[in-house]
Image (cartoon, rainbow, N blue to C red):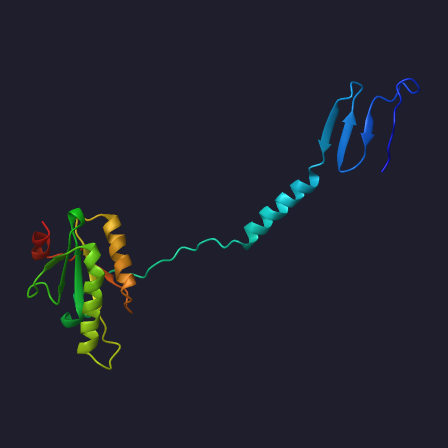
Length: 187
């Protein structure tokens, strides 16, 4: 660290008084103090912190839900689901939901709301488990049928409700095999 003094009558070539440290002070001829701060260490620290947080922060990974869509195989190759273990959920226009157990022709369709559908799914799941004690392979099967007036948001909300109910099998999505009884019920 060097200190240089300039005296006005003795040395006319020295114009500034300077302290050489991390922060420099320059004193001009009119005795005005001009601070100069070396920001190199602060910039280095900022980049080290940015790098640290970028490397240690985990980005959220998208989570996908399995769904089963019927394929276009011939009718004789398809295996039917037992009607006693099948819950069908219909999504209609204006946030309408209908559900029934079993086959469409013999079932009584019932209206519901998104706030009640999880309880219905869990109740039906427990009913199927109680009907088939000791056989965990015989669990509730769900078919979701979005009708033409339903929205994508309703479909995603329904998939969330099915997922939160804790089913072992993936729900089947069937938007092609909708009967007239189902269409008329949700009009």
